[in-house]
Image (cartoon, rainbow, N blue to C red; front, side):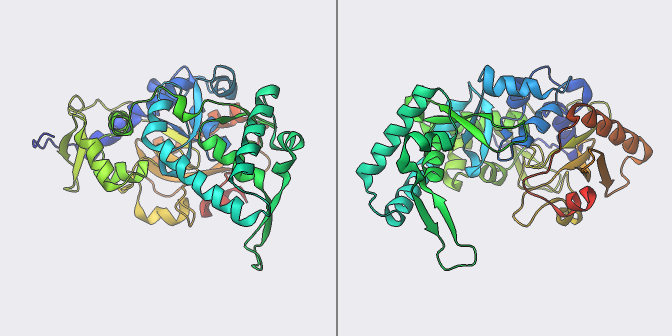
Length: 395
């Protein structure tokens, strides 16, 4: 790593953000795949986020293009990966993500599931579990796609249940299918297909997948270095702590991944040391003034652990839930200035928490709200993780 210390100020970071995250109108993309590549991966824990985040960055926002990429062309792949979070990433990047993060997470998911089933389901052992998994995969292969209920109809053992937290107020009875299918998906052996409802639905059909072990992926250390380069290209400059937080890697693995790249150290406005790629040190022309309405868990809003350079700490209680999940946000020129929501009648409403940008910002936000309403149409979106401001606005 170079010991030279170029300086990259906050204005430079925001200019990069607007261009590289495809948020400025003149930087928007034509296809969903371009969006996913630009932000490395689209958060997919909330199905609506994938569509809202992609369409916010498309020249012509269209949920059908997102569905094409996910379900027709399969050029986007959902993976349980960074920070044990579901992401939709480009098919070419999927093996790198699987090797760098997904395989380790899948191994932990399997170990937890095996203990849960063997300890909680009478009559189950490792042999029976393996047989049930094999029958499930065979049934899915024969059908081509199936819901969890349809698979359980063909593999009755999937209907067995386990009582979770017995004796507690939140005691629940859970079918073993929920954990078994989750692990098979985490390993890449099955994948989420089209939802049973519209694009906001969390009820998916399952389709056959490709196990991570069968992917032509680089070894984990090489994959971590490759993902670090991709991350810095889209989100740099970033700190080691930002990378560690975003990936969920250990500090040792993060430092080794950085050392395996050609990243150089830069000085940020607050005096901390950031990392940037050597061809990304020159000033970036600022795009035209821009506004954006981004969904909860948007990849840009969740892009860095240290957020003060684009988010006033006083606004955190309004925009995040208690678990640290960010809700829908309003942006102006690379900074979060408020939040938005959709009411039951479909109206897009927002509240600005600062007067940054004055009337120009307010007009641009209103235009973006109208743009969002025009393509969302009759669909009603309620974020999976609700935040104080979103609840108040949706009222």
